[in-house]
Length: 499
Image: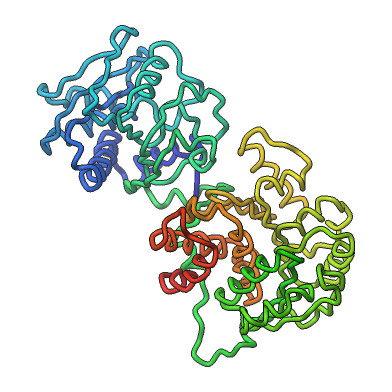
């Protein structure tokens, strides 16, 4: 799924109108019909509805919804916020179509702003995705009144006041939505944590915009869906053998942190790696042999941390970092491994922190190696504290292009930044995964896929999706509070069964 800028979204509407062809007023009817059907299917128990419309096409969508919901027996009330003097033609047409039985009041001055009944759902249709400056005046007061209410709020397409494709600094003048019904695709700003309260639950409502627009329009932004991974996944053939699916080397662990590499190993095995070898300090040898019998285990000469490099020629992929610590001798060993590596490497945890401390290591990384930092680790890699997620993402993309590596910037809607400038946002995952061990499992999954001859790009995109989807299955079974990373790993199989 491609993600577009505000201008591209407007162009998509125009393209659909010209090439389907369809009149703009009929496209608005189709969009509002899909939105209304979503409401009936999901929120039918809320029968009292207040729709707050602007005078543009987003407001026109609201007027059509009012008419359609009224026909289905809902109790409707409309308010029209006059933030300018030039209503859109389709808005004016749908205002004329609005049944007289629907109460519709104008808001032109502050004193026109109502106090909303506690019994009503508020549907926000003031501004759409094209807003380019903060709301002000009476419109700002309307937004503040809605936010101060305790009513459920549903925003159509995007929360009024929220910018579509760049950072919003005016947080006090943006609708705080409980639900956003984003038309056709998510909007870029919906994928960043600072806008969480403006988005609420995100639902995509397809309205049949013209598919031909995709083939003629370029964008660096993509959203990974189940259809995406179906195109990446490689089913196994009946006569395949373990050698077909690669030999993975995992390096990690230190005294007190053997659990991290244990989790990575189990996740790699669940991801389908043909053979897996793990190198751990001697203190972890018996633990690994007892808990991960499917993996081969090599004990490092040191009891408490990694000190030795290893022969790398048998391995098709290498994962480094889970629980590895930052001992000086470990750093020397990892440097030697990176210098000798001829296959892409997946780097996580303290291996990333050691990379941040050793600038010259970048020269050793094989092209298309995969780095999986969380926000703190990424800021250590750049030595920059970022004020907002837009700047952080831009920096990650720049790093991926300049260093010719893949940056998996972990978090909700994990962003995978590729060397070609493309950025893929993930659609799976939940807050229950925000706990120790989750990143170790991700390293194992991505490394395991990489060993199986998935390209680094495919391994990163598919691995992040599988990780999040396994977390979603786990949250259903265990709850977001009680789920553990071991539970998540046990559910990786469910994800493969569903692809």
